[in-house]
Image (cartoon, rainbow, N blue to C red; front, side, top):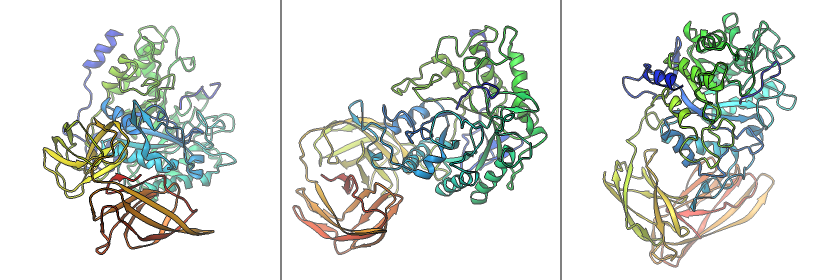
Length: 598
């Protein structure tokens, strides 16, 4: 996060920038896990890629939740990031969030009259992070996790170190072990930014190459990086600079001069990326911003602090944070020492180094350097800033979760445009084909699984959900279509309906027992059923009877066996139940065959 310095902590240019040659891949790049070669980051097919993204913060704050969900559905914001041309998200977190893993509440359940974030109810911070990473991967975005601070709060850790008295060095490394294991084999998460903005090098904080274990950030980065690579040797390890080296000071995290004398050495080669943060005079009036400042002098400063790593082909460089305000001259200005001169010069410097990566600070509408407005609407606030950033963007391949997948589906129409719950509708579009059970249609929060579809249409039953405008999306092999508004009428007509009785019949110190009754309140029989719910915590089913269980994290799915699949209209089935480990708890909602149960 942008901070004060550790000590105290043009139209012509724009046209010239647009005319510059920017790295363009021979074919769409970005598959699988990534690695490095010289100053380049390469994908699993050895094609060069450029990190070109945004910071989206909030998990590191006392909210323990990524911000903006009070205004928009998280999937809407992710699509905004994608549609504006960014390919990666740097997501900050705190040790406190990982270790306490609370249940956040600062999000809306309705945005623009449409249900929003309803699938986040009752989830912990890490479970919500799972959701964000899952959807990000499905639309072709990648994620870099960033240890931003120890205790929950704003900005970088005050002491300048990667640990505090409450969250030790060992705890910091263990947090990385937890997250590495959590996202093992998930290629959406391409790397780990070990710690945000080490600083206070001259006053007991993080130094580079000083040799003192409690303070030497380089040595700490090697310990944490090796712990991560010992679990997943394919992750990129991002190491930020400090503030000062040999008496020369820069922004917090921005000084990488120590690399020349004391490089980071990891057990697994070709996974290291150095990261610098850089800001303009609106944050702090640094001495290099003055009446004599030129683009050339700024380039010399960038090169001295961190650019030499790229030009010398020591390793790749990623400008993990830089940002400017939204006033007319903040992104582009010819005045010496101005914010606009610095910002446009930095963009030009990155553009001239095709493999150099970057993530803008920040997407967040509440930030003074925001990309979006306070409502997190899809159009960036500053058109000039967005145009400059677009000139150094880089397209990646589609959904990344499994390194491939089908083409993204598109909805062209829905017929009829409105229907009662329980009624059938036809969705027309393209790229709906998939293997059986690979298509899902999402109506706000409830989903319906499609077992057969053509490339042009599919027919589904409207779930039993509240009346009003509901966004409909189609997901095929992990890739989600455009969202199309569909009207659900108020009547509870149609043939489908269900009610779940979830009774806790016994509980003890380490677990509990539940009996479940599935009631068919509709007018047609259920022939084969799938019951689904999400636990509010870390409950794990130990033994379930009269059903086939699948549990992934807090999400539970139970399907019928060959002898109990039929539930007649008006009938019920009451012989299913389970024992579970953890605190006794009742899920907030249930669905049967994708239909929300009342």
